[in-house]
Length: 306
View (cartoon, helix red, strand yellow):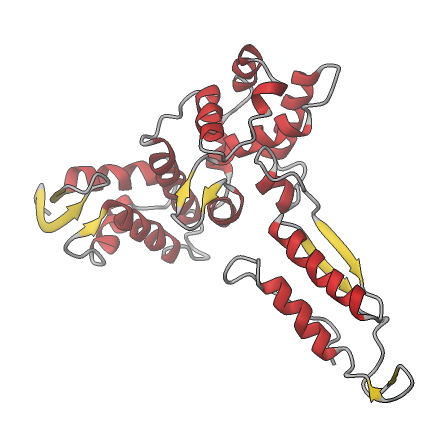
């Protein structure tokens, strides 16, 4: 390929320019650098065949990621690292405008001003403490997250505006914010405990539930991972359970509903003037309450509906 192509690219600021092969190849080389048995030229050529005129730089990056994923096989599993590195690179560019990461304090202040983090963080910690906490953060650990893992971060855990598709942090920042929130009320060796908790999370020694991972440090004040809601066989309890489902799901909690007390189809109600509709209509009612607040494409499973 020549240094310029006939493909026009739309940059992040809306301006247009010809696709510059040097910049394109630089990203491919970066993604494959130091990884055995992968080819930056194969990645570049395969992805290039999928480019089109007036494509955005973000779309080009997504095509490179999906091309790397397509190259993953039992013979070339290392392309998983390539895909992960491309996701990580794209995340940093999208969130911070460059591969370099700003200071932890500046990220916290910005996200508080945007109401993405709780302002309590700056009440819990002094600026000097936050600067010391920043020394605990090892952004190179993003490179140790597999492609599926970093996609989970991008889709589920990272603080974001889902309606506008704007991201506000990267994985290591999410981890340290979780640790800072968890240890905020500790009275002794607080910073040491933050470092220990951050390390065990990022070195895969523990796995924390989704509501904690996604909600800590944000204005959301409820971090239940899984809740079991018992339902009695009366309308007040059934309606209260549906209201609880909506409230808990909106706060990122997992839901379980115990409906075993509801009478069977045909059972007598009151003095027998009507018969019971059975549990299935109420399961559908609960499912509707659940689906009203869960993100699109979230899996909802109903057990023992029959």
